[in-house]
Image 1 (cartoon, rainbow, N blue to C red):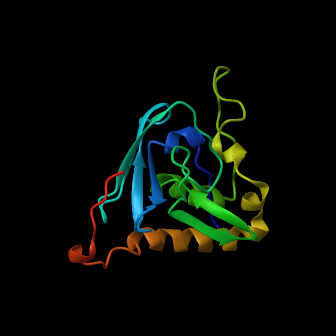
Image 2: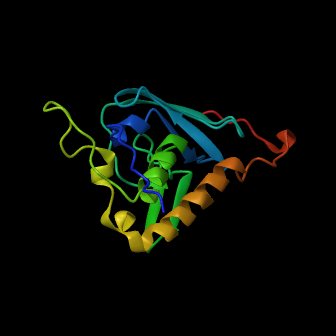
Length: 166
């Protein structure tokens, strides 16, 4: 079997927060939260029902299955190995998939000024890194990929949609 290497780009969780897929608080469909990737203005938009909301971001919290700006549930989450596997967007999900598939997870070289323990690969929970959970994690990732390909709200008719602003 060929050795699969983990992604070596020096990515942190902050690299994935500029665009986050969430569950719309109005119609429960997939919505998007966009920001400049940290402080400033965050904007929630649901293309299905038209709901929008903006918020000035003065602080945010990372590391849960909710968006760090509005606290809405992430669209990309699934039960896995008695835990919840989640991702902010497809790029984040792709990173997780590559990391879990990898059999060689050497840490990338970092400059002395680079992040020490902030790299995403070093911050993933132990249960996600265990080889005994690899198949379960990859199946959960596949379910989440399918959820994006066929969102629950895709089949709704435009006449059934309501426009709400908030």
